[in-house]
Length: 213
Ligand code: AP5
Image (cartoon, rainbow, N blue to C red):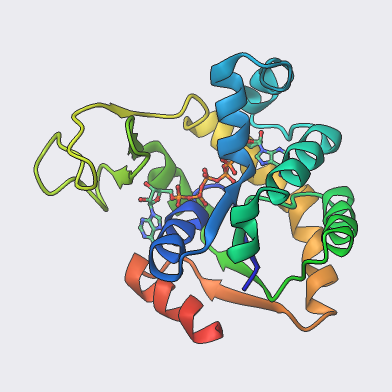
């Protein structure tokens, strides 16, 4: 099964993609994670993306389409993938159609997590992850069972994203409304689009997604 998870920043795409990876053995393809890795490694892509990401804007379609196409060519993507945060523009949606046709792959579901934007600011500014394994946490909604120790790997090192501040989050939301929301009818017309209430608790969101499958 291949699917796209869409939704504004903080909607829970990464949280739900992580769960599907664990439960169904699918691979999570997050363009945000790929770009952050490029920034950390100081590659040409990372250098081009850094300031755009810090401002809450969108990295160029050309760059993002290129990294996603390369990632789809890796063998693990054949076992079923979750696109997390891609496509984000009409140009990317059309590029994805062409890539999938060329690679003989197909989409089964496109799911949008519907959320209240004001509540998202709290979600995002409280978010942190394990610096070692990437497990996600939240200051109010999901703390490690043992304070200061990652549930998944036992690391005591955690990190927060540079773009997780209120001003940047508001800009990322505006980008979602202006550039990403207009691609949704593209998938609705094909009968593969569903909406899920992303404001429910994490388990309830997961159940709603499973019900679509
Ligand atoms: P990206 O990394 O994709 O970030 P985003 O879309 O802004 O989404 P987030 O990762 O912030 O949120 P999420 O929906 O995954 O929520 P999460 O599960 O973490 O992109 C970052 C930047 O990269 C972009 O701004 C852009 O510059 C660039 N970029 C990336 N892709 C691009 C593309 N295709 N084209 C151009 N540029 C691109 O949850 C958030 C928090 O809430 C967590 O702490 C979690 O524990 C908690 N939480 C989750 N679900 C719930 C729930 N149901 N109830 C309570 N808390 C919850």
